[in-house]
Length: 192
Image 1 (cartoon, one colour):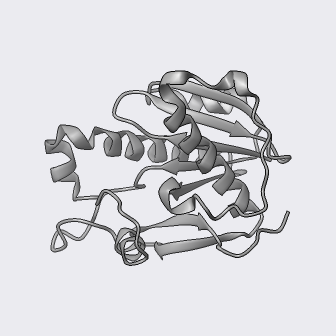
Image 2 (cartoon, rainbow, N blue to C red):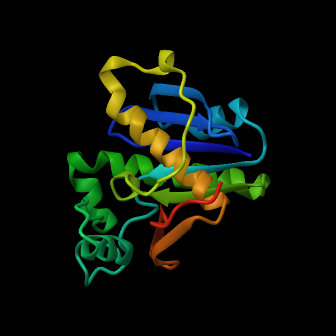
């Protein structure tokens, strides 16, 4: 099994690829959204979980202007996050381009999943994941780091590690299936 973490941005995405032994085997930076899912398929085996740091889809309930249930629940837990608005508002605002990129990535991976059912796609939020990995240690070849995009790379690694936790049953799903769930590691000591 391979674990992919994607830190979504307005222009270029950052991707971490991790193996079952928690070794980061690749870090990609400055990747455009267009064609990214297909590029990842070519880089990894058929069995992988991709964890994306972006909303899966916009708010569907037009009566609730901002925020999905999973975001409201994380906010109640004390996390600060960017609320997901309805699609019309996302399209109007240039500062929400990263959300459109996230929607596109989820859609692209869902299309691939129709052909390759051995992949899974989850949504995560690194800020809620940090501090929840207790006894896990990763191997990270330092030469992968780019000095200008360290934070994005660390967030992508956090997403990949969350995918590993998900695969190993060490996770909590926040929100509901209809609007989308955000996956975070459980707080207890993780089983390796």
